[in-house]
Amino acid sequence: MKTLFVCSERDPRETRVAVIPSDVGKLSAIGWSVNVESGAGAKAGFSDEDYKLAGAAIVDADFAKNADFIVAVRKPQVERIADFKRGAFYLSLLDPFNEKGLIAAFAAQGVTAASFEMIPRSTIAQKMDVLSSQSSLAGYVAVIKAANTLKRILPMMMTPAGTISPLKFFIVGVGVAGLQAIATAKRLGARVEAFDTRPVVEEQVKSLGAKFVKIDLGETGQTAQGYAKELTPEQIELQRRGMAKVCAQSDVIITTAKLFGRKAPRIITAEMVMGMKAGSVIIDMAVESGGNVEGSKPDEIVITPNGVTIIGDTCLEASVPATASQMYSSNVYNYIAHFSPNGTFEPNFEDPIMKVSAVTHDGQITDERFK
Ligand code: NAD
View (cartoon, rainbow, N blue to C red):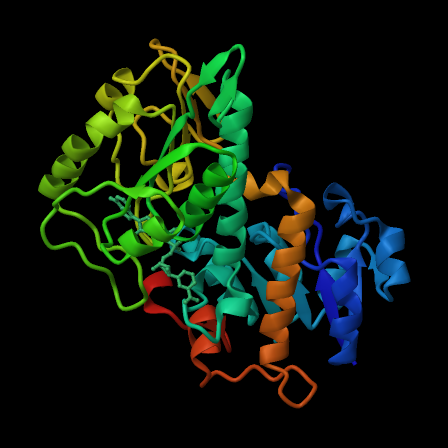
């Protein structure tokens, strides 16, 4: 039986755990002895006792030395990699575009490191797509956070004490997070408008009952993977001008516009923020990759001189850790199960999912971009 080790997260902001107790039995059934670092699930509401009852062993951090497969939510500290067994398999979010030193350390140690960010956006890979499962929750949490920050309610109310108008939300970037933000804001009764540079999104926005803001940017399009292409500086300027009026009228703006592997576009300028009403809220979901909003800061709340609150939370999904861990854990199980066709884990490097997700193998960095 091969040994799987579920690490505790080292980043103090992290609340999620990579495998939840209800998936322990499923992993055991495909040949793993599951070993969980003591306390790993505590912040997500899963105790060591819960894991033991599910059939896992509780171990300490040193267990990493013996493990055939190590799984976590975030990248490990680089100095820990020297402890991992040669030939072991490591799976987590690795932030490979920004972590070339870490990737080199995995290769030097002879560990196969797989990065969840690199999973292709294909139908077959959907069940192991961590970016999607976590972005969807982040989109939901962004709306709840905005609702908690506002001093007003979202829906229209007609009462003997007068009519309350619904609040206006503007969602910029309608990928997985944006769609969930639209759906959540609509459910809470807000009036929602949205924009994305990929024209295919218009139908999806309308199907959720929101209004698509039309701005003519000329040729935009998307990559073969479905990601947005980078706009020219002239197109960004056109976009800002086209959005300025909607921004000024919005009570909440949620920006989710990212460019895979690159810096996020700066879409909302300080001037546009200054044009908003006091009490409005902006949530910049791209803050970690450079930010869509001028003045947003990672993991800080900024209040502008005109009374707009800009929230730059880098991990919104971490505030619903039990659900986020449940989805992450399911993605982990599906990844391992996909490569266990005969009941035991056999990484197939010809499989397109393994080919792109494994960024190191056999002592080599397998993706040119991370060398
Ligand atoms: P993302 O997080 O990379 O970006 C969020 C959104 O921002 C995207 O919709 C993008 O078009 C948009 N954007 C980029 N620049 C912008 C700008 N200047 N102004 C406004 N919007 C801008 O996207 P994502 O959520 O990871 O989704 C990326 C693509 O992958 C989408 O087409 C999505 O439908 C697709 N997808 C496919 C699968 C699958 O088939 N398995 C799973 C998830 C996502």
